[in-house]
Length: 168
Image 1 (spheres, rainbow, N blue to C red):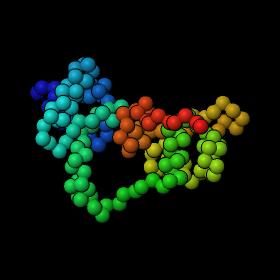
Image 2 (cartoon, one colour):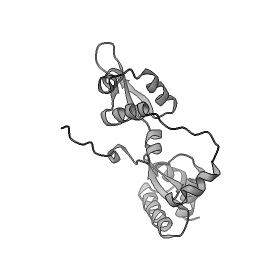
Image 3 (tube, rainbow, N blue to C red):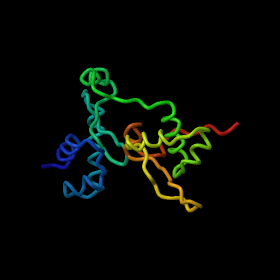
């Protein structure tokens, strides 16, 4: 079987973005050839009148619905348990995303309030992770974002975060 149909099948059955190196390993091809085939698939899906697209997300590739189909797809999931992030969670997540690795105390200094419960919630939802310990008294925990964070916000990597406005 040719490379593109194999890649398409793998992207269809996975729930997580697959990195090109992993795809290459699975299909027994060179990573360069896999990347080229993925780019061709992206162009083919973009040009076709289909409800799907191949997207690059969180360091990998995934088959996803096109934004234009969102309203219809949402109807399928009406009534299912979903969640939204609170203002406190979004603020805390933004601080971590832009300043990582960052300690709880550093986050609290920016927000001006305690963030223990927010950090716990963000860890449960797998948006943040322990990224190590700071070389300082008490060796405080350092937090960073995860691939789940990138997926949730539709980012390839952290370089796609919006640029912050310079302080006034």
